Length: 117
Length: 114
Image 1 (spheres, rainbow over the protein chains, first blue to last red):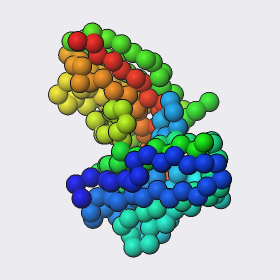
Image 2: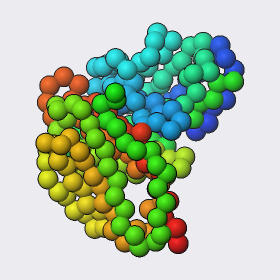
Image 3: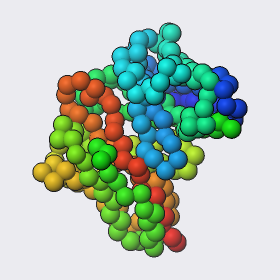
Image 4: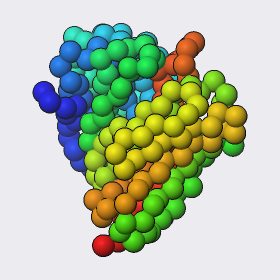
């Protein structure tokens, strides 16, 4: 597609429920990133994929969070036993070049706004 | 202390004003400096991209980086109501581990009044 597509755009769930957020990156982009943006804050890094593998998941806050990218394209962020503190906008980004070279420009999606009641 | 500090504002200016936005940072390993614009309910959109110290100009926008002071700025000339958005500074390392990882400021909310 022309841009990074994220679904759902909005998700309201109850505390303790399981949630999946999907990201469809720009076609041909090998690198994919998840960031989390809490209200009034800048985005914070969660996880980075190069191809199918998670090259860096150091930003995932705890083991309730998990992300996959089985075919090297679409990625799913999975949150188990959601807590109210998980409420945030989850942003996905993709880039053509995975390494942090000068041309590594990230394109962000519009985000999935998660509200945990 | 956060690695990147940015005054969240809000900042309100009249149309046509010159706007100055800035960030300070503490990690001397940062080499690439970016400014993103984020409209309400949208994802961040890259505006300007600078490597190391210096100035870069693109239309009404000028980005400045002063690595000696660990200070970056974005200037918007002849500001327009369509510039009303949150402006996020972001930066990353030039090489070494995790140099793909962006560290963002909190963002400054700008309103340009017609």
